[in-house]
Image (cartoon, rainbow, N blue to C red; front, top):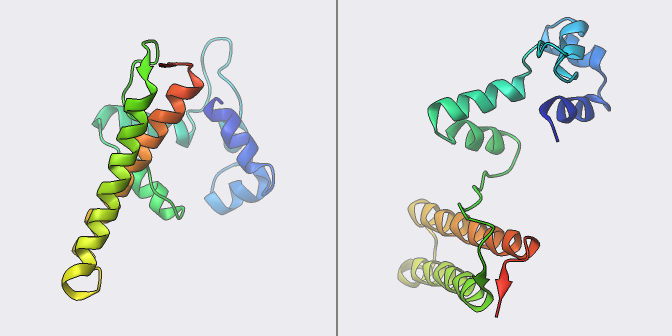
Amino acid sequence: MESHEVLKASLEEVGIKLAAHKLGLSQSMVYKWCQPDGEDGARAVNPLDRVLELVQLTKSTQVLEWLCQQAGGYYVANPPSDLSSPVEVLQATQRMVSEFSLLLSSVTASLADDQAISPEEAKEIRHIWQNLKSVGEFFVASSEAGRFRL
């Protein structure tokens, strides 16, 4: 989906009039955000495009991570991969199992010393969990791309 399509769909329920009022903007500005590029490429650059430009400029995902946290979630990057080459399905499966095992080991180790998970240990568990989700996404994306071969 294009950014203007995402904004248009997101604003359907609340309405452009109310959104413009709450954001302190004119309705015409919000309408422009929801339109594709004109024939000459001119349009109002919408907030999604601006955030994307910021991420590309800084080469950092901190802005995305913050936005996801504010929305009640977490940002998980897709692993870099060349979706054109075949992948061994057993190796990809073993990697997922290995990452999950690492998560379980971390939880077990955290609980072993004092039967509680400290904030520092929770950070480590979160880090391992983020990696596991990324490995899982690689597996699913590879499946969708038809990359698995025996």
